[in-house]
Amino acid sequence: MRSEKILIVDDAKFMRVALKRLFEKYGFEHILEAEDVAEALKVYSSKKPDFVTMDITMPGDSGLEGLKKIKEMDPAAKVLMVSAVSNKTNIVTAFELGAMYFLAKPFTDKAFDAVITKAFNFTGSAMPLKQAGQQSANMQPVKNMVLTADSGNIEIVISGGAVIGKCHECKDDAEKGRNIARCSAENEKKCFIPCGFTNLSDQQVNITCDNGNYFVTAVAESRFVTKLNLITISPGEKRLIRPGDVLTLSGIDFTFNAVK
Image (cartoon, rainbow, N blue to C red; front, side, top):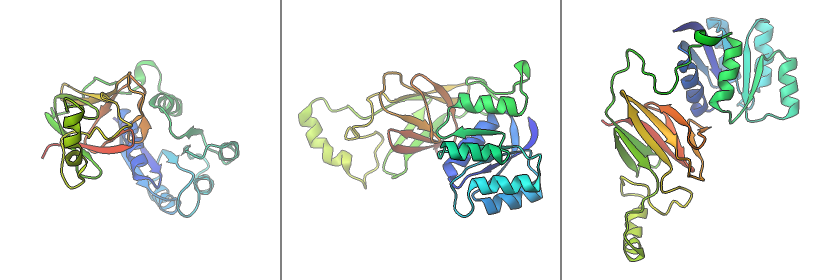
């Protein structure tokens, strides 16, 4: 476990969750959050974090102004700018103001790993990143999980594993015609993704369970986008998925949680 304190500054909760998950892979336990620059300055002043990630576009002062004020407060501050607004002007300004690195959203785990490895001088066997498939010693087995759509009308129970994609249970067009009204009803909870979601493959992702940990793999044949906590999963890529994570299947957001 790492003793350093991390401060994540971003007005988007999903992004804060995604970054927190990535830092936790390295064993960082002391992770602070702020949703705007004003809050970030208060947290930095009182908690003195060792590393900061800073978005640029937020309510109130911009992240660039936040970077400037943190560097005025502490010239040795280590700040990583993480922003979808990655034009040349912003990048140059960030480095002129003292940013250590700049990551453009959306970024890959590999890009994030490269930045953190350099920022904390991780090398060889000293690099504490937990690779997919490894289990923490204190991790308890989780048997049944559920994917719940943001709309609340789709719940898919996953017992040890599942292939997730749009439904193709109807045997022919006639049966599909009879069922389409029922499948499309917003007020009826379903345990499948209706076939009407055209931007979803028959097999979009494969969810597996290994030693109590769940993993999601984007199916290589799928031509549609899969994201975990807003970060795109490449076809064939396997990622750890935990309670509270948001899995986006071609625009449909599902929250992953234990069955109650």
